[in-house]
Length: 244
Image (cartoon, rainbow, N blue to C red; front, side):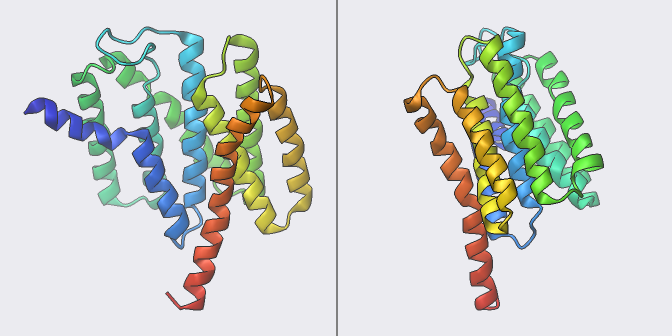
Protein backbone atom coordinates (compact mmCIF):
# COMPACT_ATOMS: atom_id res chain seq x y z
CA UNK A 1 0.00 0.00 0.00
CA UNK A 2 2.75 2.46 0.98
CA UNK A 3 4.64 1.52 -2.18
CA UNK A 4 1.63 2.48 -4.33
CA UNK A 5 1.16 5.77 -2.47
CA UNK A 6 4.84 6.65 -2.88
CA UNK A 7 4.63 5.83 -6.59
CA UNK A 8 1.65 8.16 -6.97
CA UNK A 9 3.48 10.98 -5.18
CA UNK A 10 6.52 10.45 -7.39
CA UNK A 11 4.47 11.61 -10.38
CA UNK A 12 4.44 15.08 -8.82
CA UNK A 13 8.06 15.38 -9.92
CA UNK A 14 7.84 13.46 -13.20
CA UNK A 15 9.73 15.54 -15.75
CA UNK A 16 7.63 14.47 -18.76
CA UNK A 17 4.37 15.19 -16.93
CA UNK A 18 5.50 18.61 -15.70
CA UNK A 19 6.80 19.54 -19.15
CA UNK A 20 3.47 18.58 -20.73
CA UNK A 21 1.63 20.74 -18.18
CA UNK A 22 3.94 23.69 -18.91
CA UNK A 23 3.47 23.26 -22.68
CA UNK A 24 -0.32 23.15 -22.33
CA UNK A 25 -0.25 26.33 -20.21
CA UNK A 26 2.00 27.96 -22.81
CA UNK A 27 -0.45 27.10 -25.61
CA UNK A 28 -3.79 27.76 -23.98
CA UNK A 29 -3.12 30.39 -21.30
CA UNK A 30 -3.50 34.07 -22.04
CA UNK A 31 -0.38 34.81 -19.99
CA UNK A 32 2.80 34.90 -22.07
CA UNK A 33 5.00 34.20 -19.03
CA UNK A 34 4.47 30.47 -19.44
CA UNK A 35 7.01 30.59 -22.27
CA UNK A 36 9.55 31.41 -19.55
CA UNK A 37 8.57 28.27 -17.65
CA UNK A 38 9.07 26.07 -20.73
CA UNK A 39 12.51 27.57 -21.38
CA UNK A 40 13.55 27.15 -17.74
CA UNK A 41 12.44 23.51 -17.71
CA UNK A 42 14.37 22.80 -20.91
CA UNK A 43 17.45 24.43 -19.40
CA UNK A 44 16.96 22.38 -16.23
CA UNK A 45 17.31 19.26 -18.37
CA UNK A 46 20.58 20.58 -19.82
CA UNK A 47 22.48 21.47 -16.66
CA UNK A 48 21.14 18.47 -14.72
CA UNK A 49 22.39 15.97 -17.30
CA UNK A 50 25.72 17.74 -17.69
CA UNK A 51 26.39 17.83 -13.95
CA UNK A 52 25.41 14.17 -13.53
CA UNK A 53 27.96 13.09 -16.13
CA UNK A 54 30.69 15.43 -14.90
CA UNK A 55 30.36 14.65 -11.18
CA UNK A 56 29.61 10.91 -11.60
CA UNK A 57 28.25 10.56 -8.05
CA UNK A 58 26.88 6.99 -7.79
CA UNK A 59 23.17 6.54 -7.24
CA UNK A 60 21.84 4.09 -4.62
CA UNK A 61 21.98 0.46 -5.71
CA UNK A 62 18.17 0.44 -5.84
CA UNK A 63 18.06 3.30 -8.34
CA UNK A 64 17.39 2.65 -12.04
CA UNK A 65 19.85 5.45 -12.91
CA UNK A 66 23.63 5.21 -12.84
CA UNK A 67 24.37 8.52 -11.15
CA UNK A 68 22.62 10.19 -8.24
CA UNK A 69 23.31 13.89 -7.76
CA UNK A 70 21.62 16.01 -8.96
CA UNK A 71 18.23 14.33 -8.88
CA UNK A 72 16.49 14.98 -12.19
CA UNK A 73 12.99 14.77 -10.75
CA UNK A 74 13.66 17.03 -7.77
CA UNK A 75 15.55 19.49 -9.97
CA UNK A 76 12.65 19.64 -12.42
CA UNK A 77 10.00 19.89 -9.71
CA UNK A 78 11.86 22.71 -7.94
CA UNK A 79 12.02 24.73 -11.16
CA UNK A 80 8.34 24.04 -11.90
CA UNK A 81 6.86 24.79 -8.47
CA UNK A 82 9.42 27.50 -7.69
CA UNK A 83 8.49 29.35 -10.87
CA UNK A 84 4.82 29.45 -9.85
CA UNK A 85 5.82 30.76 -6.42
CA UNK A 86 7.99 33.62 -7.70
CA UNK A 87 5.54 34.48 -10.49
CA UNK A 88 2.20 34.51 -8.68
CA UNK A 89 3.26 35.03 -5.03
CA UNK A 90 0.04 33.85 -3.43
CA UNK A 91 -0.28 32.40 0.05
CA UNK A 92 -1.92 29.28 -1.37
CA UNK A 93 1.09 28.57 -3.60
CA UNK A 94 3.49 29.32 -0.73
CA UNK A 95 1.85 26.39 1.07
CA UNK A 96 1.01 23.99 -1.76
CA UNK A 97 4.27 24.11 -3.72
CA UNK A 98 6.61 23.25 -0.80
CA UNK A 99 4.20 20.49 0.25
CA UNK A 100 4.20 19.05 -3.27
CA UNK A 101 8.00 19.21 -3.43
CA UNK A 102 8.31 17.57 0.01
CA UNK A 103 5.99 14.70 -0.99
CA UNK A 104 7.96 14.20 -4.21
CA UNK A 105 11.24 14.17 -2.27
CA UNK A 106 10.05 11.68 0.34
CA UNK A 107 8.64 9.36 -2.34
CA UNK A 108 11.89 9.54 -4.31
CA UNK A 109 13.88 8.46 -1.24
CA UNK A 110 11.36 5.76 -0.27
CA UNK A 111 11.37 4.24 -3.75
CA UNK A 112 15.17 4.09 -3.65
CA UNK A 113 15.82 6.40 -6.60
CA UNK A 114 17.99 8.78 -4.56
CA UNK A 115 19.36 9.11 -1.06
CA UNK A 116 18.60 11.95 1.32
CA UNK A 117 21.76 13.88 0.37
CA UNK A 118 20.80 13.95 -3.32
CA UNK A 119 17.33 15.19 -2.48
CA UNK A 120 18.47 17.82 0.01
CA UNK A 121 21.27 19.30 -2.12
CA UNK A 122 19.62 19.21 -5.55
CA UNK A 123 17.19 22.14 -4.91
CA UNK A 124 20.17 24.48 -4.43
CA UNK A 125 20.80 24.41 -8.20
CA UNK A 126 17.31 25.36 -9.43
CA UNK A 127 16.96 27.92 -6.63
CA UNK A 128 20.06 29.68 -8.01
CA UNK A 129 18.59 29.54 -11.52
CA UNK A 130 15.25 30.92 -10.34
CA UNK A 131 16.98 33.68 -8.36
CA UNK A 132 18.91 34.82 -11.43
CA UNK A 133 15.72 34.59 -13.48
CA UNK A 134 13.67 36.58 -10.98
CA UNK A 135 16.25 39.34 -10.43
CA UNK A 136 17.79 39.76 -13.88
CA UNK A 137 15.88 37.94 -16.63
CA UNK A 138 12.19 38.10 -15.90
CA UNK A 139 11.72 41.64 -17.19
CA UNK A 140 14.11 41.57 -20.16
CA UNK A 141 12.69 41.53 -23.72
CA UNK A 142 11.67 38.04 -24.92
CA UNK A 143 14.33 38.00 -27.64
CA UNK A 144 17.12 38.72 -25.15
CA UNK A 145 15.68 36.24 -22.66
CA UNK A 146 15.70 33.38 -25.16
CA UNK A 147 19.09 34.36 -26.55
CA UNK A 148 20.65 34.14 -23.07
CA UNK A 149 19.46 30.55 -22.71
CA UNK A 150 20.45 29.60 -26.25
CA UNK A 151 24.00 30.78 -25.62
CA UNK A 152 24.12 29.15 -22.17
CA UNK A 153 22.87 25.81 -23.50
CA UNK A 154 25.43 26.05 -26.31
CA UNK A 155 28.17 26.48 -23.71
CA UNK A 156 26.86 23.38 -21.93
CA UNK A 157 27.07 21.51 -25.23
CA UNK A 158 30.65 22.64 -25.75
CA UNK A 159 31.58 21.46 -22.24
CA UNK A 160 29.84 18.13 -22.90
CA UNK A 161 31.61 17.71 -26.22
CA UNK A 162 35.10 18.19 -24.80
CA UNK A 163 34.67 16.76 -21.29
CA UNK A 164 32.49 13.71 -21.96
CA UNK A 165 32.77 10.81 -24.33
CA UNK A 166 29.13 11.11 -25.38
CA UNK A 167 26.77 14.05 -25.06
CA UNK A 168 23.91 13.20 -22.65
CA UNK A 169 20.51 12.92 -24.33
CA UNK A 170 18.93 15.48 -21.98
CA UNK A 171 21.59 18.03 -22.96
CA UNK A 172 20.59 17.46 -26.59
CA UNK A 173 16.83 17.62 -25.95
CA UNK A 174 17.05 20.73 -23.79
CA UNK A 175 19.50 22.58 -26.04
CA UNK A 176 17.67 21.90 -29.27
CA UNK A 177 14.34 22.59 -27.60
CA UNK A 178 15.51 26.04 -26.50
CA UNK A 179 17.00 26.71 -29.93
CA UNK A 180 13.76 25.67 -31.66
CA UNK A 181 11.65 27.78 -29.33
CA UNK A 182 13.88 30.75 -30.12
CA UNK A 183 13.63 30.26 -33.88
CA UNK A 184 9.83 29.99 -33.72
CA UNK A 185 9.61 33.10 -31.53
CA UNK A 186 11.86 35.22 -33.75
CA UNK A 187 9.98 34.19 -36.90
CA UNK A 188 6.70 35.30 -35.36
CA UNK A 189 8.13 38.58 -34.09
CA UNK A 190 9.75 39.42 -37.43
CA UNK A 191 13.06 39.96 -35.66
CA UNK A 192 15.03 38.81 -38.67
CA UNK A 193 18.36 40.04 -37.32
CA UNK A 194 17.81 37.81 -34.29
CA UNK A 195 16.61 35.00 -36.54
CA UNK A 196 19.82 35.16 -38.57
CA UNK A 197 21.90 35.16 -35.38
CA UNK A 198 20.09 32.08 -34.09
CA UNK A 199 20.45 30.29 -37.42
CA UNK A 200 24.19 30.93 -37.24
CA UNK A 201 24.08 29.42 -33.76
CA UNK A 202 22.37 26.38 -35.29
CA UNK A 203 25.47 25.85 -37.42
CA UNK A 204 27.53 25.78 -34.24
CA UNK A 205 25.11 23.21 -32.81
CA UNK A 206 25.70 21.15 -35.92
CA UNK A 207 29.45 21.27 -35.26
CA UNK A 208 28.92 19.36 -32.04
CA UNK A 209 26.85 16.64 -33.71
CA UNK A 210 28.86 13.60 -34.72
CA UNK A 211 27.30 13.48 -38.17
CA UNK A 212 24.40 14.67 -40.30
CA UNK A 213 22.19 11.78 -39.20
CA UNK A 214 22.59 12.63 -35.53
CA UNK A 215 21.94 16.31 -36.26
CA UNK A 216 18.74 15.39 -38.10
CA UNK A 217 17.58 13.33 -35.10
CA UNK A 218 18.39 16.22 -32.78
CA UNK A 219 16.35 18.54 -34.99
CA UNK A 220 13.21 16.61 -34.03
CA UNK A 221 13.35 18.48 -30.71
CA UNK A 222 14.11 21.71 -32.54
CA UNK A 223 11.01 21.33 -34.70
CA UNK A 224 8.79 20.18 -31.83
CA UNK A 225 9.54 23.15 -29.58
CA UNK A 226 9.90 25.51 -32.56
CA UNK A 227 6.27 24.81 -33.39
CA UNK A 228 5.16 25.67 -29.85
CA UNK A 229 5.20 29.51 -30.21
CA UNK A 230 3.42 29.17 -33.57
CA UNK A 231 0.70 26.92 -32.13
CA UNK A 232 0.31 29.29 -29.19
CA UNK A 233 -0.07 32.22 -31.60
CA UNK A 234 -2.73 30.36 -33.61
CA UNK A 235 -4.69 29.53 -30.47
CA UNK A 236 -4.50 33.18 -29.37
CA UNK A 237 -5.82 34.40 -32.74
CA UNK A 238 -8.68 31.88 -32.62
CA UNK A 239 -9.52 33.04 -29.10
CA UNK A 240 -9.60 36.67 -30.26
CA UNK A 241 -11.72 35.88 -33.30
CA UNK A 242 -14.37 34.06 -31.33
CA UNK A 243 -14.02 36.29 -28.22
CA UNK A 244 -13.10 33.34 -26.01
